[in-house]
Length: 170
Image (cartoon, rainbow, N blue to C red):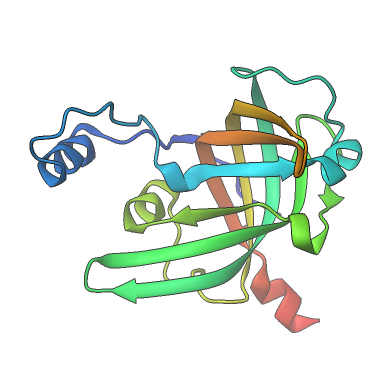
């Protein structure tokens, strides 16, 4: 059984914002409150399964996902892990399996690992991780060629547990 804790804020702290400012010396830009890699887009083909109807930007919703680690990039600057949502649940709905070609993904850097208590053993390609959090709708698109989509920004989250060890035993 999962060990649930309080949600942890994914907002960038003052030190991280200062580092971004230093990296962009001389540029007057609006800095994000949340890491850009924590946005994910849900395509129209998944709307019915997830219970998505009329959605407006600014709405906040709880989500849970079963995500598979599909990429781990280690460098001298840190570690970047990409997670692909295999199953997703919004609000009080049920988990829905997502079409392979329409699966959203998020990218976590070393700062996200610390905030979410993601340990090094979990960040291995092929591992399955259970994520619970809250996200805000930041975009609703209706494109002639690509169809409808909803983009969400994860604002708080919790990596619940590494599900891979259970799968390996079966």
